Every structure is written in C-alpha cells, then in structure tokens.
Image (tube, rainbow, N blue to C red; front, side):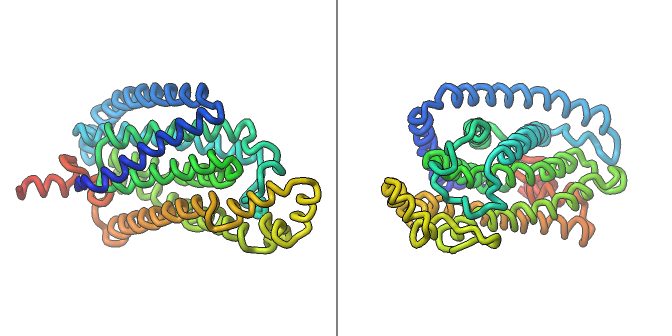
Length: 361
C-alpha cells in the first residue's frame, strides 16, 4: 500500500457527493425510515461479526493451527484484522447473493429478456417490486457501511485504492438506477453477478490467511483458486459485460434480440409500439424515454460508463489472480507468500515482502 493524498481526496469527494445524493433520493422516495434502519442494523452486524471473528480467529490460529507448517498464522494483529474483514465479506456476499437471486427470480429475467432492459417502468408495473426495493435499500446500506469501514477502519492492503474506487463506482451505479427508477435491471444483474462470484474469492482468501494450502492443508487454497477462476471469468468477464453494458447499447440501437423480440427504443422510434403509445396519450413517456433511455445523454449512458469502469477493475483483478496462480502453481512459489505479496501486503504488514523491506530499512 502506497498512500496517495490526491487519489484519496478525489475518492473521498466522490463518496461525499454520493452520500448527499443518497440522502436526497432516499427522502424523495420516502424510503428514509427503512434505509436508515438498515444502516444501523448493518453497522451493528459488522461490529458483532468482527468481534466474533476476532475470537474465532484467535482460537483457530492458536489452538488448531498453532504447529508447523501453519505456525499460528493469525498471531499478528494485521493478519487477524484481515481475517475479521474477510469473514465479514464472506457473510455479506453470501447473504446478498441469495437475496439478489431471489429478487431476480421474482421479477423480469433481464439476462434472457434483453429487449426489456431499458423499457419504461410504467409498462413493467412498479419500477421496484417489493423484493427488488428491499434488495436495493439493503445493498445501498451495506455499500455505504462497507465503504466507510474500508476508508476509516480496515487494514489497507495493496489494492486499497482499487477497492475504494470499486465501492464508489458501484454505489454510483446503484444510486443512478435507484434515482431513475426504471434502471433496476442494471442493479439487479450487477448485484447477482458480483456477490455470487465474490463468495469463492472470499473462501480462497480465508484459506490463504489460515495457510490451509499445499500438501499439509490438503491443497485447500489451491482447490479454492481453481474453483474460483471459471466462476469469476464467466460472471465478471462474460456475463457482466454482455448482460449489462452490451444490453444497454443493444437496447438503444439494435432492432430485435436473438429471440425476435423488438427492443424498446426501436419500437419507440419506428415500430408500432411508439405509435400506439402516442395514440393512447403517452406522448410524454415516448419523448422522455427517447431522450433519457435511448440516447447518449441520459441515465442509460451514465450507467454504461460506470459499468465500463467496473469492468476495467474486473480485468485488473483477473490479471492479479492469474499472476498469483502462475507464480504459485506454475512456478511453484509458496502460495501464502505469493498471495501476501500480490494481494494482502500493506504498510506495517506481516507479509514476507513487508518484513524484507523493514529489514533493509
């Protein structure tokens, strides 16, 4: 971790703007009671989970993993705090993935029905079904608490600013789709793919922190890595760009999907749908949707830009994961040391590289 005052100032400023935007839209939609309650609940859960994980981590490390080759892996304060944070991430990703999948199955299947991606919510029913609204408000609360924790309380790993950027961008996507209402499709797909693919990543990191790896650990971390990579590549590098960014632009400019269904914007511009809506007195919806949903100056484009930035971070993390796999599996370097150097290293940390740097200083 290398401190950058300029990057931190920019991210802090964007995060502060998002806080103000969220306060405005939460109150505008009269969701303030539930949202602020969820912020309180999530904050309490974080505190309780971290406390329990500290006790659990110490027991696992000092009792069950005290002897070689594990050597009490969480005896350092940095490693123990990383373990606490990672268990919390696993808990939240697992629970939010389950909620996202349930909410997605309860609504429109946007992945398999891309022609409905930018459809005006007036013709889909409510912009937020009950479970979609619960998911959105809970996710907003979780992201704000998580981002605050990352910024002020957690150990700063080597990818701290990348993680901070990821949180700020994700909040931007969620807030934009929440504010516009009819872009819940973007948030739903992002929630589901992100949280689902994060679960095996969290498991791998935890096994690595506990040094449950190589022959003595029954190759736990290595198996978790090999399980993670196809799930990560499919969700983050294929489904994510194809089902979010791709469908945004297909919805704007394509005529029909592969099943022959007419896209919303095409129907408004030149199809019978636009003519029928105008004849039924919905000219205002046609004009508004063509301006904000089907052009390059509306909410669809804002979401596409933010999602493209997320994709860039996915590519960077994929490179990092492949680099770890190459060094540990192909080159044969120690799995724990490689992961520490590539991922967990931070100032004052317990990684071999940090120790070596301190010794040289």
